[in-house]
Amino acid sequence: MKRAWWKESVVYQVYPRSFCDMSGDGIGDLNGITSKLDYLKELGVDVIWLSPIYKSPNDDMGYDISDYEDIMTEFGTMEDFDRMLKAAHERGLKIVMDLVVNHTSDEHAWFIESRISRDNPKRDYYIWRDPKDGHEPNNWGSHFSGPAWQFDEKTGQYYLHLFSKKQPDLNWDNPKVRDEVFGMMNRWCEKGIDGFRMDVISLISKPEGLPDMSLDADGFGNRDMVANGPHVHEYLKEMRSRVLSKYDLMTVGETAGVTLDEAKKYASSEGTELNMVFQFEHVGLDGNKELGVKWSTRKLPLVPLKKNLTKWQNGLDQVAWNSLYFCNHDQPRIVSRLGDDSEQYRERSAKCIATCLHMMQGTPYVYQGEELGMTNYPWKDVSQFRDIQMINAMDQLPGQVGILKEELFPMVACKGRDNARTPMQWDDSENAGFTRGTPWIVVNPNYTKVNAKEQLSREDSVFHYYQKLIALRHSSDLIVYGHYQLLLEDDPDLYVYKRTLKAGEIEGGTGRDGRAADGPKQDRELIVVCNLSGNERTFELPEEFKDGKVLIQNIEAHNISDGRLAPYEAYVVER
Ligand code: GLC
Image (cartoon, rainbow, N blue to C red; front, side, top):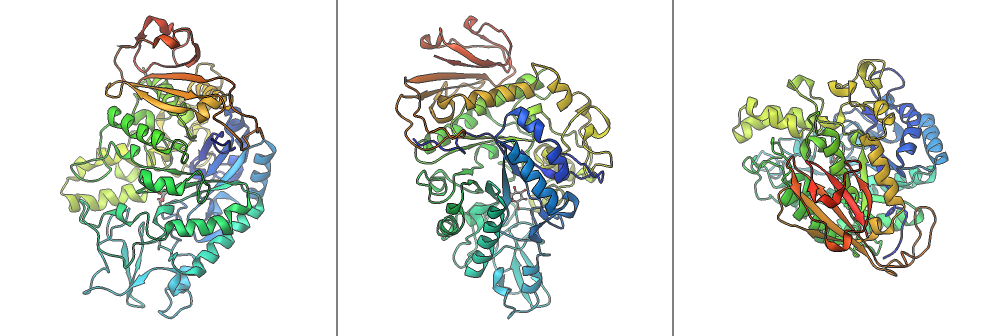
């Protein structure tokens, strides 16, 4: 095992649109982020991943980029960015940028040229095809409902868009496209950024000949079959040699449709492509099997969740590196999804879930508000939705899969991405202290109780618990690098696992504080015990841990040797 700073770091994701608005237009901005750097420093994270801040018409909230080298008007200016980067670096915080290069906006200069004529020099920057029997060139569906092809009257061809029709897919098989992307990345690296989170990077190489795929429930070709295409690893290796290898970066690939075997290639310890990937299997477990869509009102089922995370923990150990996440801007809030967001158990279950995730092997990601135990929003009506995926699903899915709108609504409300996108809850003043203007999306009414100011003032808050988990990781090679072993595999309530690290297992590499030291001098072991249910349970600590040290527990001063576990209780013992 080799040390690396990005293995020992904790990442915090900022969704700039909903983080902090300084200008008063109701939309978060870069100056807002700069103003909250001290808050993040206090939490103790090392790296900030910024969702896209580039120029964009915001069809998909910044994931549709019209200029990679300019800042979104609503977010500020390049001077604001430079100031933010400098202020972050002064505090020892690193900045990782979102890199969205599977597609651009249809308002990007390349696409505007590309659509002018069939012989335009930029035509081949995108994926254009003739109609097939007067229809779409194949059966692929967009991730945002409907076909993945849009007909363009002017030149009589279709272009491919795996997301919205305002997000045409780039043609990575064209070497000029790769030159453009790598050039742009190098310029950002020269500015001093610290890494990239690569949006749907598993989709950049399309299957040879763009064949029809077997059908998903909504009548379109299976979306996962479009992932991990024939040249993706070749293109990432090229990216490594032409960009990534020249800088000391952290890279994480968002890899829709990734399997364990594919992840071993993307995130190999050999360092040939990326540092780590985001896999999606565990956050798909509460999907709607009957309808074949992600929309459902189910909770994340614990036994399959344990099985899945265990597969990833053990499967990547030594050969690659895991990213650890439950939340991001595309996922509903985890305390509502896996815990209990009622007043009684919101805080305790948020801490229990955090313990469960943060004690695993990999690099943990905290999504804004997760450290406060922010919850899903109580949606009343479609008119409150801002997310294109939720809006399109409500619009198109009832006709496609034969479900009534009234039946679908609670499912979209429960799993929709806007749950993560309501404004960060800073304090109990109007609009949760997010803006003095009119917020672009509803503010969760629970901000009067759930907010950063209140939690900073209270020692036993969710915020301070996250702070402690992060500090523990920073002080422990066992937590960062240790091997993982699941116990009580089939228990429907308890998530219990061990971590072990032998003396001498860590050799070489450089850690987050520049440390090149070897790992522990003795074998080390800890046990993580989480009751992820509302039931009272018992759990007898294995003999060897009985005299161990409690590293953290979410019910202060509870004597764990009595073998009783309260609802959502969690603790960690090291021996
Ligand atoms: C990724 C992003 C998501 C976006 C999509 C298209 O999945 O996380 O927000 O809609 O890619 O760019």
